[in-house]
Length: 324
Length: 77
Image 1: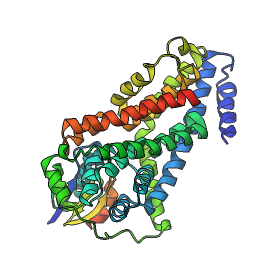
Image 2: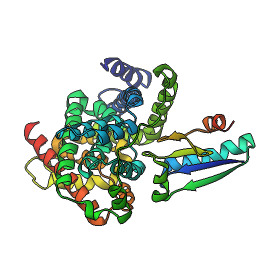
Image 3: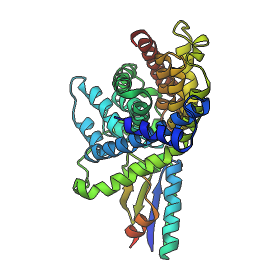
Image 4: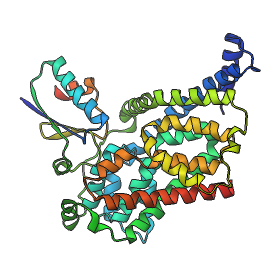
């Protein structure tokens, strides 16, 4: 699918710049050109597709759907899948949380959405696809959905309502199914320019991180020998996966830049499961989100929420290390 | 005089929206009262799910994304 980009990168680096493919610099530069173009093509493509899908399932609609329907546990699956298609910004997590519980959606299902929405987002999918190929990306998406379902289910069973801020508990007490709200009645064609503009804005917003990430990745790719990290981190070290998740949490804002670096780490010998666990930590849990959630719940519940999610990320990491 | 509200818990996108509103007002010369709402409890009275939100004269115009200067100019006129 991306052969044409590889031809272009080869041509640019080896012919136009005249740098030999045998040199470290040539290899690094070729990697940088190819990966940057590939990831940007994918990023624009996937954000546009997600924009189109999302224009049919805006978050208000999702909330109303979950608020009205109780489906023998299937609502967890729906909440998690909706989390994939709706865009998510950690600054929206609190209004979203309130909006959900206000509509009478149980806490567990709200958590399911809150876990999956940031974990499986359009930027992560695109960069994953660019860095690791479609098979690993599909695995990541499915894991993200399952993780949200199990995490939310467990959190829902723990009866955590008492840890919510008093004013939020008041909202839950008065919760009611939301009435239909007004939606855009525009056709897809009318909405399309706006979707494209949004896609462009998203790409623009993360482009600097991606370029830095790929530049670091490219340098390591060209200058470090294959299998370099194997001597430091391998599947035999049980603590590598938990450590990877914990280290990932504070790196949220640079998720777009971290993935291309991790791709090279994997090529150079870090187990893929450990790497995926690390990226889940980076993408799925963030400290700014924790700070914002403080307004609706106490630290204990934030800790339980983060702890449960991190635990399942760690388990996924081990699982991937076994099966991949 | 128009009444403009920007809702958001102080994230980067919300600040951009606010600055775009100010810029749009400057460019059009329209006078308006601009209020920034950062308190969550206050914000939730508007029945929103995603931020930032742009409200002009009590009507939600844009939610969940940054409105750019040109778009705000169109909404103001």
